[in-house]
Each structure stands twice: as structure tokens, then as C-alpha cells.
Amino acid sequence: MSSTSAELSRLIHTLQQERQQHADAVAQIDAAFISLGITAQPSVRRGRKPGVAQAPAVAPLAASVKPAGNRRRRRKAKDGMTGDQFLLGLLGRAKLATADVNKQWATSGRKGSANNLLGKLVKEGKVSRKQGKGQRGSVYSVV
Image (cartoon, rainbow, N blue to C red; front, side):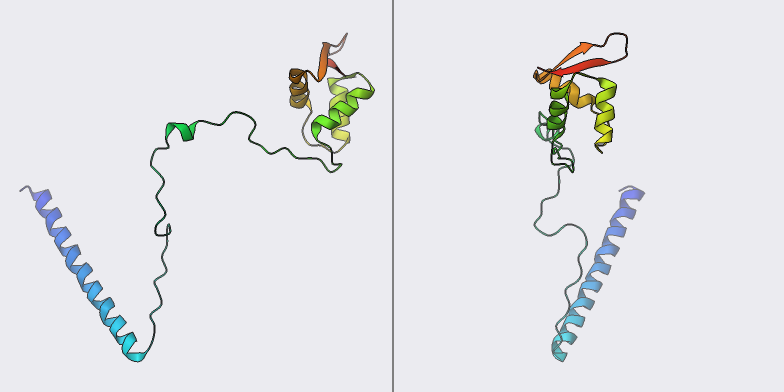
């Protein structure tokens, strides 16, 4: 046997002896508690609960693939309207440029900008987009 394997074997034997000494000491303490009529408190266990399977080191392929669609929950603003409803109502009254839509969006107390939602509505065919004449951005109207 090489010196490292002999050293490892000796260390394991020493640790096993120490573990047995500790187990004997715990048994003596439990016996003393029983003789005094004291119930020993269960040891506080840290880590995962017994019986709960440990997570695999590598997630399976199916679990690592994101499901299709939007995973975020859509919220309504304080006025009770979704962003879709707000934009469709706004564009139903008049044709507006992107900057004007975003200005109304911010004025109503909504966070961010309406650009992504405008693109979504155009893609769904609910709103039409035309290039603005002499201005930057597009002009939107309800279909």
C-alpha cells in the first residue's frame, strides 16, 4: 500500500473510533435523562427535510426548456384597465403618433412605455401602423 492510502486508511479508522465514542456519550446522556424523567429535546436539524428528494445535479432537458408564451402575469393599472384596453380606447378616438401615445401612457400613471404593447397589438391585427409623414415614429389607429 502506498503512503497516502495507508494515511487515509488510518484517518478513517480514527474517525470511526471517535464517532463511536460520541455515540456512546449520547447514549449515556439519554440514559441519565430517562432516569431523571426528562425527555431529551430532539436535535435541531439543519438542511433539507428528511424524505425530500435532493434536486438532480443537472436538470433534465425537458425542464430546462422554457414553455412557450408569456410567463409574466399581466396586471391591471389602478384605473382597472389593462394596457390593451387603454391603448385601444385611446386609439379609437384619434390617430396618434408613437410619441403622443407614450405621452398619454405616462400621463395616466403607467410605468415604462407603450412601444412593446403597440407592436403586440399590430401583430394581432387590432391596430394598424403607418409611417408618420415628416416625423419620427409611426402613426397608429384602430382597425
